[in-house]
Image 1 (tube, one colour):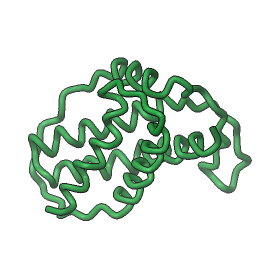
Image 2 (cartoon, one colour):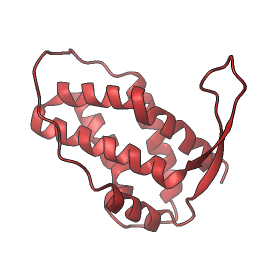
Image 3 (cartoon, one colour):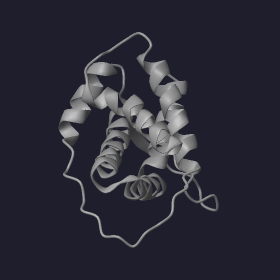
Image 4 (cartoon, one colour):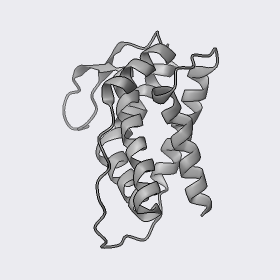
Length: 150
């Protein structure tokens, strides 16, 4: 139960930047701290998998999330990232987008919260782990690096 409270608190701490317009002087530091806590939580997820079928959540409004992030973080933009996906190959330079990074993270977190509220903790933790490993872990890493260097 304690893990559930922590999960919901972390979701709210990160998702608020894509749901509510409230730019503050401390927004960047709050976001940095929340992303680091979310990362630590995700690498330590523990749950008992079940075979239950659960319905998917409704789609999030990605464009609305992006627009809200742009208001809260007007200096967010594009940045270069050196790929290190395969350490045995030469890295390549590619373009990252801080707003897209945060919007993708928030979209996955909002789906996690929906699953928690409608399907229960097990489904929420399963989805969070799946989304983290397959999708938003790299977004967190890239966004934290971007924030550190801005």
